Image 1 (tube, rainbow, N blue to C red):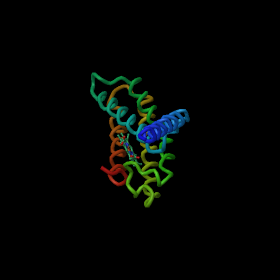
Image 2 (cartoon, helix red, strand yellow):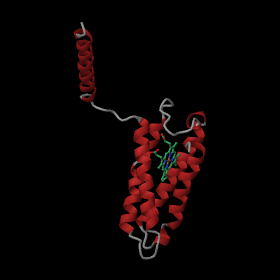
Image 3 (cartoon, helix red, strand yellow):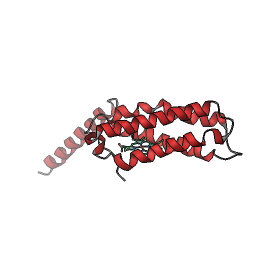
Image 4 (cartoon, rainbow, N blue to C red):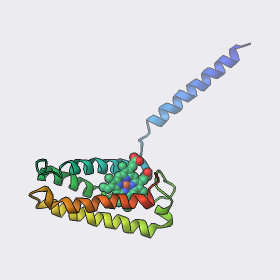
Length: 149
Ligand code: HEC
């Protein structure tokens, strides 16, 4: 009489396979946390690339501007902080101090705007250095109050 447990196990295995198949055939919608983390990781890369160009012989105006533009094109990231059930590595302050967070986001967007216009007409790294520094400080200043370590 040990045929029953075996077929029971088999039935469970089949159900499990069917469930996995059913799940994986559904379109996957990335959640807010992974969307915004992916964007911010790209920002880090862009920022590092720009930083590496802040030398006399390494500045490439076109490549620098491309990175600044890429950051500006993804400032829609803030919409992915609307849902307070999607915590990720964000501190609760993102939602308990929503006005403060919005202000930091706005200041960042402004700093990115200034960086893009500086990059537009830049001839040398000295033309973007100040705007880059301001944008970079804006990352850290928001993380300090709104991102957990
Ligand atoms: C207005 C606030 C704000 C600004 C400005 C900001 N960040 Fe963030 N950042 C956050 C928060 C909040 C998180 C945590 C997000 C999460 O885990 O869901 C985060 C997460 C990150 C992460 C970790 C992503 C991961 O995979 O865990 C990196 C890297 C990062 N930010 C880079 C940057 C860089 C670079 C800039 C500037 C160019 C920047 N951030 C500007 C708020 C900000």
